[in-house]
Length: 262
Image (cartoon, rainbow, N blue to C red):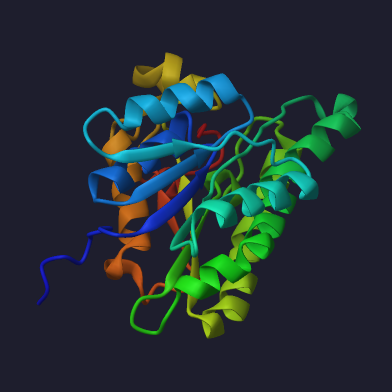
């Protein structure tokens, strides 16, 4: 049995929404396993600061700020990567947004913003990077695309986040459809469905960790290493045969009944 199943040495990765939260956790984990990591986010200063921080211990993290809410933005980021790298080994589609409002008051803007960034952009960024991923992939060492969905795409959250629920459940099925198409190009597509992790998007877990932990079967919220480990598994040789699957990383919350928050 080989000892480097989880190594990412020599691999090039792009993590969208990589300047904070779950994206930053994944970027840090990839770097620790030897990958060269590009991170992208809408806010340039935040993206630059995160890349500098993640590079401090000798790893390589490069900032590529980009608004990915439009197809043009996705194409622009793909062009920037192509100018820097002959191929791309790993793409993590993590950039996302959320919106909550009562059913009778939920605005069109809250629908469009969330669906565009959470569901439309992962498709079109993957499409734009198809050539770079295909250049990397082989049967023995496939390229990887990892979608970041949510357990809110697998079970109902009592919060009225209508477009978020729809986008994340759609992303899980989009993962399956893309996986079926891209596997013939030696590109393996899979998905992670996070539960409660402390982030700017999940402020309940960030600001009220003890309270949220009470409804998690594991008795705690997720840690940076919990998220990084799942992504490393899928990105590395260890996950090469995991095609189209969605892995809940949630401490068991998806198994619980309605009324528990993610």
